[in-house]
Amino acid sequence: MKYIFVTGGVVSSLGKGLAAASIGTLLEHRGLKTLMQKFDPYLNVDPGTMSPYQHGEVYVLDDGAETDLDLGHYERFTSGRLSRMNNLTSGQVFDSVIKKERRGEYLGKTVQFIPHVTDEIKERMHTVTRNNPDVDVLITEIGGTVGDMEGLLFIEALRQFALEVGKENVCFIHVTLLPFIKAAGEAKTKPTQQSAAKLRELGIQPDIIICRTETDLDEDNRRKIAMFCNVEKKNVVAFRDVAHTIYECPLDLRRDKIDRLVVDRIGLGHTPSPALEDYEKFVQRVIHPKHKVTIAVVGKYIELQDAYKSIYESLIHAGAYHDTKVNIVRVEAEAIETHGAKQVIGHVDGILVPGGFGDRGIEGKILAARYARENGIPYFGICLGMQIATIEFARNICGLEGADSTEFNKSTPHPVICLQEEQKGVTDMGATMRLGSCESILFAGTRSAEFYGDKDRIHERHRHRYEFNSDYQDTLQEAGLTIAAVSAKEGLVEIVEITEHPFYIGAQFHPEFLSKPNAPHPLFAGFVGAALRISESGNELI
Image 1: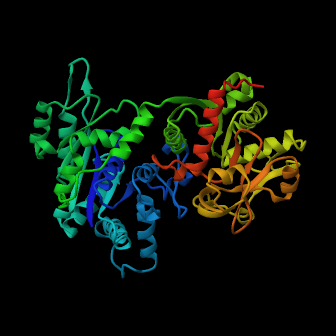
Image 2 (image 1 turned 180 degrees about the vertical axis):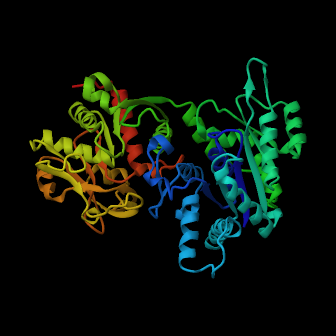
Image 3 (image 1 turned 60 degrees about the horizontal axis):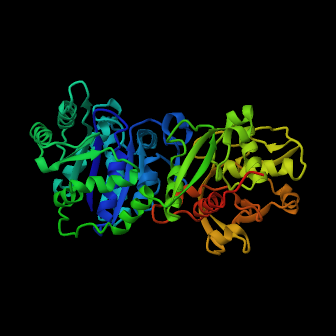
């Protein structure tokens, strides 16, 4: 196996994850099998207990691991299916080391950062290598910024690892900021020089430097960076701001032939140039679509771009599938509670209510679901959004006054959404929900089955504690809420729909975690297709 390590310098949020994912895309289009992973220096065991304000969305893998949102980029940009082994945090490392010490596995030795903590980090690399013998290249992004105290042990572990596997099998890529100072009228290379120098102080010489820049990288600056950072001039690569979509990033990095630089460094130069025709077609459909629709996303973290990252990307994928630009209107749920759905949402082609926790904005989301149902606007409810649709239907169609979820109102007279039996008595917050991929039975004749191509079994990823209360199943179905899918193991309701509506579907799972650029999730494709029909029909609100 060959190894690529991607580090970052100067400032955070430079796009290391996108750079790593883009390199993965290019290598896969050269015919190589890649696998990606993220090392995060924070002490949380995983992001599962973090607020979206801290870390954006929590991305869930098939095996139920709650991970960093960058793993979403990895799975969207490459074909690899990731597991909990592909996301390592300082919290996991220290937890493992302390448990080993308590069990006496260190045989009475003094437990130290080096070698015990660094060995734990390296062991993750070796484990992933052993478990994936068919993978050609393992790409690892190191979170944080070089020089941060919390990341030092990861950098040291990588230095040691490169010596163990042979430097000829390793490529270190350092992503830095090349700021443009308007007052001076020029880009400055000093931050890049200082960052690369810091990395060398820690024992790692970068092989390739990626300069994050608003403009192009002129030859003088390329030469200066090469000289002061001790790399070849051709290995100084520009990573420019893309004009339209993050899916342009692989094509931008390809301009400086980064894939060729990487494969030459790790001895895979015999691989052919990347075949990017299909990928380029996808990007062109995103940039120059023939149609457009407007979708309102009604949430409680709506001001945060990364809080619903996978949902926004899934809408882009579905839009490209229909050759359609999806204009997203971000609607704060609490604003609907104050001003009403019609005034806040207005005329849109679709309404999506994403997942979430807590009671803030819930009544606004319920009003949004009612607005969609009564006016023939396509509605897509995901996780909490499915529960919202159920509550709204119970209250306003079934006449179950005060119907609610016990998450928000423990004394509700009609708990149409309630805590799962296995969740009762659970006190720990982290990794205790219903998590990961589960099999569901899809019922024939439903709209949902139609979107899935009439499959009778599906596998989708979950992240929730509360469920549709089966005690109300008959009442809701008799009133017109169709149950389209149930879990194969427990018989829990997975999809509800109103079949005669243009599109009114709520899914208890998170379909956004399985959508890819040239393979949009069936429900997202169906939702955007329904919104497009509404848009082109000139539908007026009832």
